[in-house]
Image (cartoon, rainbow, N blue to C red; front, side):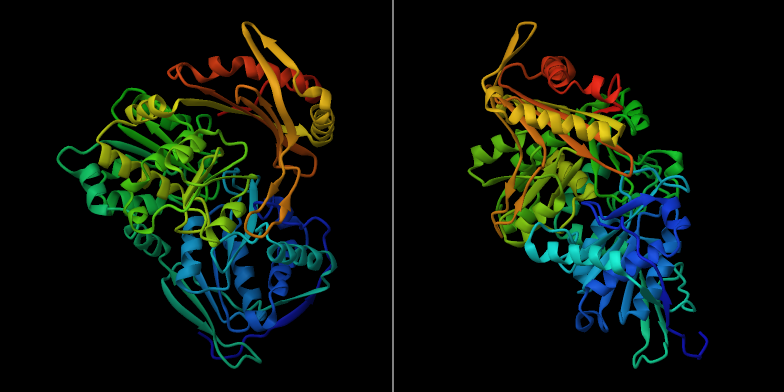
Length: 570
């Protein structure tokens, strides 16, 4: 390295009004970051400026991403700005790649003040795709906790971004992301060198999992005398190297058990979303019965889909309920005990039935992992899940796709049954919550908001309660209708407007939410949940068809949005 001191510059800039982080951080089209002058720099400076200088000076920050297009460009800028803003050490994943769960793990391992995650999760990548920036705090959780302090920090970042006039950067600092180890840089006016450490994030994360699961039992299941055959699709996302190292190299799965394990900037032109629509190739490969277990992961590795033989689909609500019912198949929970279960409000009530039977506290939260993190930090929560293919434990403060897969494999190893038989036994024991979600993507945002506003006015009117809706031979009577509101039991903060709920007298639910609102489009989501004690082996869409008809009739969604049907059904 050149012995000359690297210059720190202060560059004038102008603010942008649209850099408020959402529940998934700041997420925009790649073109926005590329074409708007200093757009990336402004937001990164706003993050650093929101941290007290005393905390920032000489601190450690973790950086990594899911490998999508613009990842390496962004990392170079972040490193240059971190050095100029007084950060002492950066921990970066090899090639700039690190899964979201691994970043949460590494933040704790290196006692960092936080981490910057470069991902747009399950959204498409490539030059025409999406890019995102999330900031995780020292507990390894996403910054946006519902607590007052965290919300104050979030607002502070946003307010800084609206008034920013300059940013600090060290443009001559260039990092080699391909070589493991430490790199040091001498900056002007800095007493200590700035250090960048390129780490093997797979090993840190694998070590965490070794302390949670019985790897010997898993190895016997996957490569022993009577091993099962599995098929795992990394969808060209960040989790590929983790699957290859942990499932194949360490636990003995044949290399061809894992597909699409090379991270690509555009995810191979695919949508890295682990559901029946976008992971259709995996589903098709499972149909002939040659594989006993299948799984898929999203772009940054925090979501998962579980399949059994012949493509038997495990809904995310059923998945977390089965893990809860078999939680002591995982050694970690044998040692820690179980403090509580939680699910997001739109997720079916399957987990509630396990919680009631086991006398374990159940929390119903708004959508967003931050709410689970607050409960975990308070020692109230051990296992949680969302219907959007997210499942996790209190080992980190993110949902964790590979953790969920190993949890399922631990259950298979203990019970020595198929995925389908485990589910059917679960339904016999608890009954079945039939659940589906209809996504209407790219709906005009004005039309979507107007529909939701009119729908709320209708359902909160007192006359709506006790109304009866008849479809064929089924009659549903409204027992309760509201816009879901959550009071955090830890800090008493209140989160309002979290989704419109219609709850019927038999416990069935219809829920409406807006998601992914951008500049001019939104996704309208309808969730349908219905409990059956006896009819547990029927087709989900057939069983939920009457409620789906009611949901569309009440909302007039097709008429109000001009859409004839959903983009995705899960």
